[in-house]
Structure formats: structure tokens, C-alpha cells
Length: 141
Image (tube, one colour):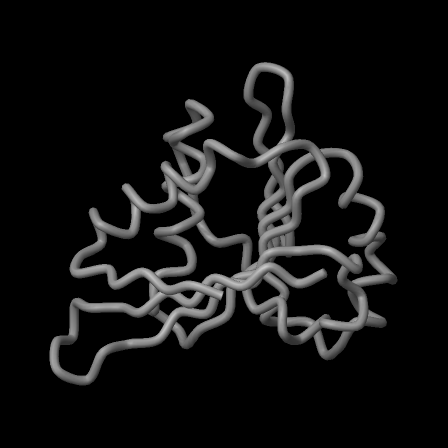
């Protein structure tokens, strides 16, 4: 596990763009943190690396947004409104994992539906400065 201290939304975007350089088909990124902690901003950074920069929003009501860039599809999930992993299975969420890159906000709600290997990023506010965020990055295997 390692961590990154983001001092601004732009830091989060830059870190995510750099993080995205190593992503490949089948990668799953699980984002965990309070409302407004930077999960969607991080997703924006990943999407911008792949040339997707328009109309990015958290898919709270639709559960998943699909973005296509050149030869890869990125699935952006927001599972906040799901009760548990059975809801995720009911919408066929697990069927997306092998089809592209999956980014899942609030992924701790569906932990038992996640593949055996994924990257978990936990966003925590820093009490000394309201703009700062600690991002804890952990590869789950």
C-alpha cells in the first residue's frame, strides 16, 4: 500500500492521469470515501487520460456510465444506491469486469461481488486543510 497527498482537485486530476497510464483491459478500481472526498474527480482524471473530457458525472441514478475511447471501454459505476452485492449481480454488474476498465465508487458496498484482483483507493479528508485529501492505494490480490 502507498499513499498520495492531494492538496487540490488539480492534484487529484494529475495523480489520476498518471495512475491511468498503467491501466489495461480488465482492471477494476474501487473508490471509497465520504461524499465530496474526490472520487468523481479522480475518475475525471482517468477519463481525461483516455481523451474523455465531456459530461463526466457520477452515475448515482443510472448506476453505470459507459465511456468509449479508441479501443477501450471504461465503465464508471456508482453503487451508493444499492443495498448490497445482490443488487449489483441483479443488474449484471459483474459482467462488465472483463469487457473494459471498471471504476466503482462506493465499492465497499459490494466487496463480495468484486473480482479477486482489484485496486482499492480510499479517500480521506485531512483535518488541517479542507482541500487536502489522503489517497491510500492498495492492490488487492
